[in-house]
Image (cartoon, rainbow over all chains, first blue to last red; front, side):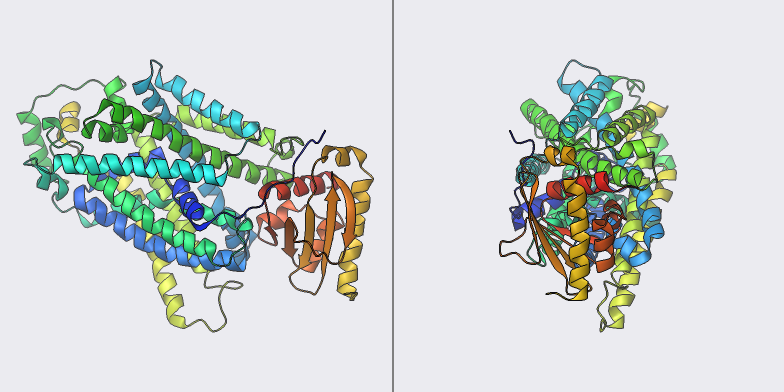
Length: 450
Length: 120
């Protein structure tokens, strides 16, 4: 009786690759980021931030296309950066990125906990733990959702959210304060810079489609999928940003306040003496799940439930992908003695490293309990934007170095690449600086603080 | 293709095959696995192909008409070091010195075999 099977090697088509690029970028934590973007910029300013981040990511997509053509490695960024900058620098750049991916998994688990507590009679902590253990158990069993199955899940997710977002925007368009929400007061330059950095985070993960290069035999397919993913994600996030601006239209507690306008905030706070539930109550979890408001904005409880299920789907595909990729990395580092050797044990039947997976689960659970405040979670989002900016800047720079650069490449391309890399770093740093600078609260938050 | 570099790669492959066949437990673990694996040097005109049938070595040759299930490319020194079990394949793979075309599951399995055989 055979123990193992030879893997099927059918190459994924262009649609599957684009869906893979989008699927690895979209997670529930993106809704949280969009919520923060709305809080800091709002309306069309958020759309502008998404558009600027998308332009930079489009340049990155072109660079990554070249990197994956010259070094078609499934190790992706780690391989590209190591070949272009040396192993030590490659590792130094990638390890913080990997650590932040784990922190993002923990945030994702908290969101799943909050969503499941809204849909089911369970506590958020139980929901988060069940999600982590269940996803880990599937990875541990050796089951891997196929790329096409993941593409279908991503398609359902994007279409579902887009329809709800459109319904929300159209439903709010006739309200008198629609224009105020869509075009709020101009943010400060630093807030806009930080917002663009925060928008970079939304695209984090699209570059992981380069890991599929081993299956793709057509040259240029990865580069093309990267560029198309960025375009599709831009439209999707722009629509979502607009929809998030309309969620609170008509809610007197959610009056947009001009950023950094302390006097106006105090006036509005005293004019509306509204008492909100204390932190830690059920309503406190609302900020963690702004996408559920999208369902409510569409005016359908079924829509909210459907959105909850879509959230679970997004979270599962994200954590499953992270577990499989990171366990492989932990295994490889342990095999080289950089981590305890025990983590390099492989289950011969299922072809998964069980100890590495267990270590990742333990880290995810610990981080889920540790990241318990809004400030910490926002710090993770900002840190992820900053580290992604740094890693992407390195990738754009590496494209202009051997072995990736063409011998006759014009100098102007190198200058442009340096400019793009500098912008990635500046916007990434902007996100971190802005995180230290709390945004102007909406009225409900002002009243809450009082 | 009987150049010195081709011969060097062939000998390294023979070393790997010998070590694999000397580990019946490892061979038994791979039952049901029947890939065609090609190894090509990126810096020299050398390429070898090995076929497995139900986990057992079926054929090791310099060329193969059937397209391989898994194609591994790297510089000649890296390929020879991995095949001669002087180096774990994980490390050159992670840092982009070994490039694989084919299903990840097949490469993970091959990597597992090499790691088990590699004395370090």
